[in-house]
Image (cartoon, rainbow, N blue to C red; front, side, top):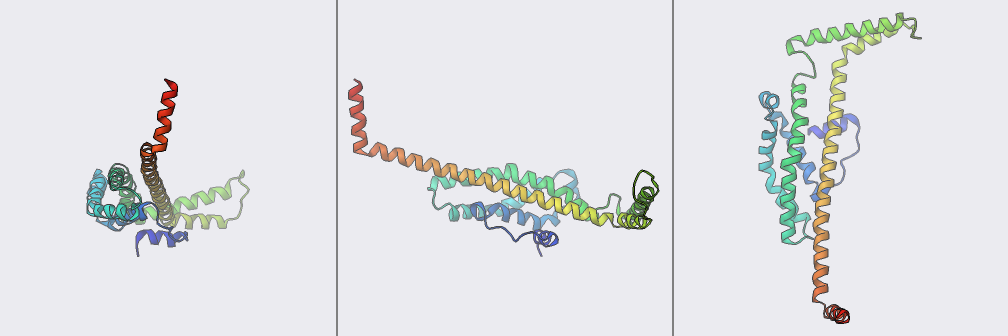
Amino acid sequence: MEVKERLRLLWGAAPPRSAGALGGFLDALLQTFENCRDGLSDAQAGAGDAERFFAALYEKERPRLAEAVARHGAHLSPGARAELAAAVDERVRGVLVPAYARLAAPLTLRERNDFYVSPPAWHVAERLGLALAGTLIGAFIVWAPFIPITAKELVLVAGVGGLLFPELRRLLALRRYQRQLNRLVAHGEADLGRLEMALLTGEVMDAHVLAATNDPQVTGEEEKEEEKQW
């Protein structure tokens, strides 16, 4: 099952939205990045080479951009389609790939360490330390006279909460990551829609001006206006 689909099922999110700009090209590209994210080595993620890793993946997916523009930009002229493809390519290289690399590289490293702060050899000690910290916090809350909680069961609950804190850390990290990915796709698709609309509007305006220039009636009226001015 794909990573994004697992995230949707985990949080009971709504079904995938309908295709966006260019048939959902950006969403599909990010899904490809997600499917290949496990290939990112620790050295690449830690040394800041993640951007080059995903840029190389985009090069292999780039032919799909031309297909998407040809299929979903049929209402544009060939010149406008070429301009749109170049603009989208520039956005992907300069915005989408760097932004995704900044999000994915740290999460990949954290996933491989099971979202612990300490190295693998210290995972058990970290979990026990969190359980002890939770127990002490619960005991302090029960003991503190200025906190109106006296149920001693809170000590056990806090201790169990500390024991399970790495799992809570995992859930919160994945939820935040999903929200950031959704925002990245939404902003990218809005930008693509704006580019497409600007090209379409420019073509309509050019066609209108050209039609007005070639219209004999309009041309005659303009000549009469010039004669009146003289």
